[in-house]
Image 1 (spheres, rainbow, N blue to C red):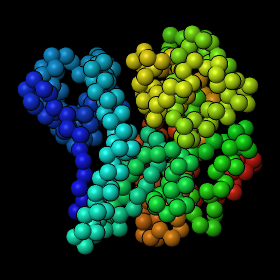
Image 2 (cartoon, helix red, strand yellow; image 1 turned 60 degrees about the horizontal axis):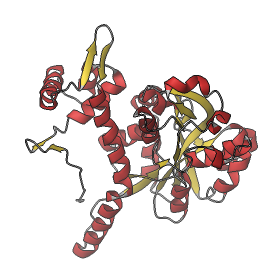
Image 3 (cartoon, rainbow, N blue to C red; image 1 turned 180 degrees about the vertical axis):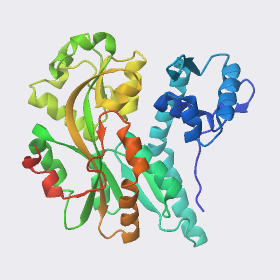
Length: 358
């Protein structure tokens, strides 16, 4: 038994809770562009899904999704705003409420002298859209209780080496950035102690408001004072990559308008640009596509899960098995800029950090 905190969505006018199926349904409509496919994904009938949308369209007095003849369904601005807010809440939950819940459960465990959860492993991962799919499959099919948290890449590796977590999700670039970034990672990656398994490769670059895309054709375009930039937070792997990119291109961070403005996820960066509060950011191609923004590719990188070799063999085997699951690979391959060519493959730290990887 574990105690968990949940965010409750409810309308103030009628004091009515939002149907728990609504937000997952909207998320799937956004991903697939089809109400029928979305209904199948959340395991309800098409009629139930249609009635759910119809009911809340009337409750909000505004449509949540729009049917386009011959093109399926897409979310309305209100529907997009709801799932954008849910993603931001989920990201904040990992940083605020989840640690409080963990502490409470540990204290209860001590007080009543019993295991709150059997074989509970903690996975702390840098924000990634593929991780969401991995977590979903782990929860649905896993025999082991793996608790997912969200932190920056280097912080995750530090916690793994301090034995405060069991699994660390981090990303590391290929190409010209390898040599300069390797020292920061090498101190935490020991092939003798850790096993590294690749989840996916993915593209990062500039996420740009479509109306100004023609003016941002390289990273040097960020020095235009009229552009409003939004950054990732200090300590994130993406921030380290961006800082190295501008350094290699001779750009002073003081010349980037908005460099100090930070968000904690790729989706939050894209959402801020989509809402008109920023013009350009740095992040995943998948996030840019999700919010219908322009994208200028900069780097390809590996997203890796690192685990202590001392972790129960059954847990390591299960994580590897799930990563080879065809359904997981299919979901990841649908993410723009992602590849599962090496998904599930064990890699060695010295090769990942080698300039031969450049």
